[in-house]
Amino acid sequence: MRILVVGAGAIGGYFGGRLLEKGEDVTFLVREKRKQQLDRDGLVIESVNGNMIVEPKTVLTGEKAEPFDVILLSTKAYHLNGAIESIRPYIHKETMILPLLNGIAHIDELDEAFGKDKVLGGLCFIETTLDENGKVIQTSPIHELVFGERSGQKTERILKLQDAFHGTKATFRLSDNINEEMWHKYLFITTFSGVTSLFRSPIGPIREQKYGMETIRKVINESANIMRIANAPLALHIEDVLLKKLTEIGYQMKSSLQRDMEKRLPTEADHFFGYLLKIAEEKGMETPALNSIYANLKIYEKLNL
Image (cartoon, rainbow, N blue to C red; front, side, top):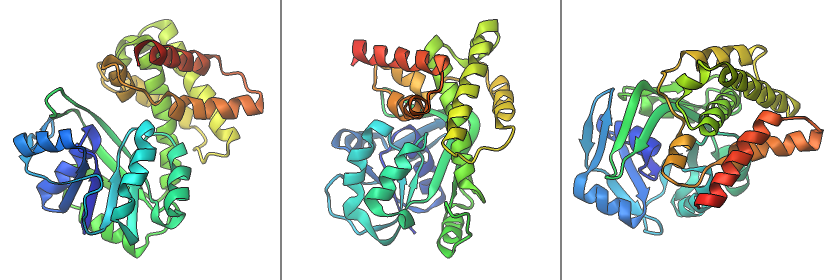
């Protein structure tokens, strides 16, 4: 199975690297600067789950290449439109597109661009970043990629993809209900990224402060209420489940959104929070905690970008 990974950043570089380490046919679609790094140093992963260096195949945007069977899409939301155009030449009628973006708004954009039949559901749980030298730094034991047909069916193609992922030194899990899992991840990452970016802190100090913990509860409840109004398939007590998870994850864990702010990079404010706030406004819902988070991010963007 020919696999194209869009970008070789923190997420695509990690999971693509693990697949390449296993021996799968993986190519990375990269920009010129990243290609030069990879040609010089290889794809370097420093991980609590095992270090590795591999020499990856790369293709520059616009270069000719045979179409791919699977396209792994892990770009930031603000790069999605560019990524859509960059992968068009590499798609054939049977290509599966597996997006790992956080949130949910990208699914409609990918459906519109390529058709619903080509777009799988996907998400990942991993704490990873790209350092100034282009190394993928992965710092948490969790390195899970979840995928599945949005219909919930065990199709021939999804089972073939499961076979390709099997045996990789990371967790690749086929989901029976990927739609629900994507919305649950959206709820988790909205809360986690929202409070860590608001307080400029890892999750630990936030949850041990009385009003920090109160803010966590408000964000998770406001977000879940909006999602249910939008008919999201949330489990009945998912707020309690995710609140427990946020009290148990590593004390020093940061969100990728917070790390982007520390690097003075753009954020996914509109993709995460703007999407929910638009629904809330249409429905006349009060969302003071989400309003504060969104304002914080937009002010950051105005002052730093």
